[in-house]
Image (tube, rainbow, N blue to C red; front, side, top):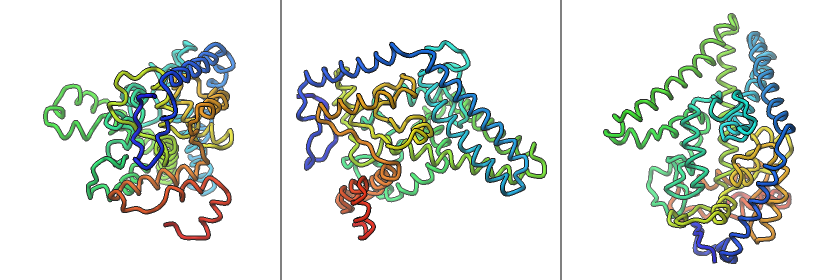
Length: 393
């Protein structure tokens, strides 16, 4: 039997109890083979894809900012704001996030490389790469090791001791969603931990990191809330509101996508001790159990930066994002053959599930009687019809 230990409740079936250690390692070898198949076929088609996306994104952003020069007129405000929001989402999700993962480093293009890319976001690239690439992807969903799990401000597991402050968890999560880029910047700085300790607060390392972050925030705010509005002349105030709205839309979208990939009901969390001596196969298994996908159209996948394929991304974070849809059927087949649950559902279902969990864990254990079946039922048309006919528990 595998040694991986989930934080599942006692009344739930252990999702890996049926797998032997040999099966887990065989699963790892099959996943290695899928990864190698992409590496062996990676080439000009993929390079052309990312260059095309970058070119289109820059054109959309430039065009949208040009339209906003006339944002004093409502139609121009709406068109420019919508275009700018979409451009910011694409830059953050399909370009910035994936470039900084090193997915395109093999091209050896200094303009599209993880060591040189700086994204349109409040969090400096180098700090984000440390907290996200090095910590989150190494310790995916390990309580006490993966700070992406709740961002250090939420109760994320029933075995975490409940405190009355968690009653405000839904509110904090909503505020974090609205200003997500700043929340991530604070998280990357480990702001709470550093400010709570006089020694850490005064350390040269923290002071240097804070200086870099404040400079990045200042540059971002100057671009969106000073320079662009001033250039718009008579449309200055409406352009400022358009930039704020575009950033708000980008933040809400990004937060929702990330929540859907990590926090819906049924996504597993893990004990610290379960990763002691963790094998390659067990690491893969943890990624499979600790991730959830968003089903949908090609446009949906693109606008999520292909993080709608969160399972595939957690398994292979350095593979080109445009290849996740291609390998997803092979990964799903592995889930089926090894008797594992491939957690995938439409965006509204996953968002509802994630928020259900946020609210449920804000209360003491047992205080919320809303059954998990309420959320699960949302995945079927019949279930949605039944839920509309009766109040939620």
